[in-house]
Image 1 (tube, rainbow, N blue to C red):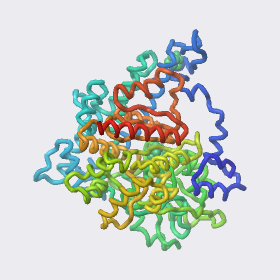
Image 2: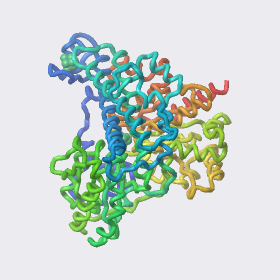
Image 3: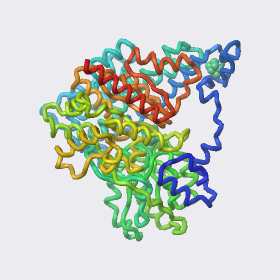
Image 4: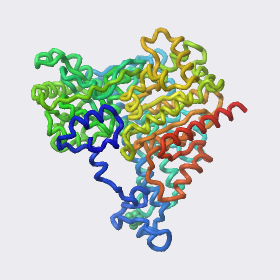
Length: 635
Ligand code: BF8
Ligand code: SF4
């Protein structure tokens, strides 16, 4: 490989080795070509908010220490970072809006082949939102739920976001109200933040950051809509066995990668693939093999057991196998580079959403009403492409690992309930109070090639589990663990400390109905499903009779990259979680902003950012935070 240092993923490393004599450019080359990255941008002290700029903070004092309008470093840094939160919240809520539209079409009878897969989830959700469920048809209940969801996007009355408020602890609800960051709608919070940070508006960094936190909470509201309604439409994830890494691409099959985030389309692609096996056979293949990339992959892995081909930084590698016939993409985290590479192979890249097109890639507009037909069209494109494969270009890494995923909070609660049916969550909290495990950590977030891909995820995980932390994961953090075989039952023996090992064994012994052992790390879903982690933290807080800042629960995004990750990290802090980030966001240009996010946030919300690029140190700071909270619970 030209740049082996930029990834540790064994599948990606094999792939890079296979193409080493070819003149193929990948992300691992481009990240090197971008070095050194601009120091002003890196620290967040470049302002491009108006076209008098760009202005850069060049000096510590005098005219060079401010922008042309007089904006200080703290104003510029805080404006830049909260605009990233706005981007993240817009992304997550756009995804949620799409799921909501699908549910809306369903109640109106225009949703083609979609159905309510989980009436159980619908009723539970309705009850949370205060919707009457007794003696009512599922569709009527869903109509009311959808209406609340829509209201959350545009409410103008002074009432809190229902899809946030209904899920919070009493303590968090009060905290958000007192600090004036409880959003009343999603769209308005984002728009307000953009207005607040326009040229010549807010220059007070504290006020700007609090505006940002409101949008971060709107982001969480959007995630709640996305996760809950996806569960209603596609089912609540249950423990499921699958495999991950590039070796899941099967040369004998028509291979289609579904890539992006939204399960609305890809669930249909999976159904269509099952229905079209014969068509694939007619073309000489053994069937249609759907593989996932990024969070679309996570969504389908969680609910359908679909193989995970790879995660974000290595997405191009799937095309380089020469055996990927189509890459169907929806939204977010899709490198434009996939089309450039696909042009050197037979692979067809197909975009499906009106807001996501790639020059020279084919676009098939995906509609809720004709979803199944659209999905079949996509499969036909892949089957046609399959016929054009160049056998000389096929080289598939032989790397793949077994994994167990599908741990919705419902599934976890079910597992705990086999030990204590009345108070299932006490199984988890008692294990913490007794010292058997140290607490819970959510590992989330992206790949960021500022360090070698996946390395930080794996180091943080290994440190945490060695120290008996119960780890749940989402997004590309889950992708990293799955690809390396760390999401398998066999990893428990190798990596878990004695306490965690015995805890997992106790759960297994109480759950003989599970067809598989339990994994080292529990996959709770895509990035939108970080809302599931909040559900678990809230349940633990209620069980312990405290608010979340007292619960031994921490979060880590060792390789955060996307604006969505900035939004998630920010609401984690407001929820009261110590939140480790291993790739520094652009805040170092202002000591004040850095101090607010790492210290003052703790005084106000009980959570704070821990910026630490060394993964071993990052993990040890999280373990300290967990130990401190457990100790406080005991006194
Ligand atoms: O929503 S973890 S790189 S794929 S942003 Fe993107 Fe980051 Fe991956 Fe999923 Ni999340
Ligand atoms: Fe420069 Fe102020 Fe305009 Fe920013 S808003 S680009 S600091 S003049």
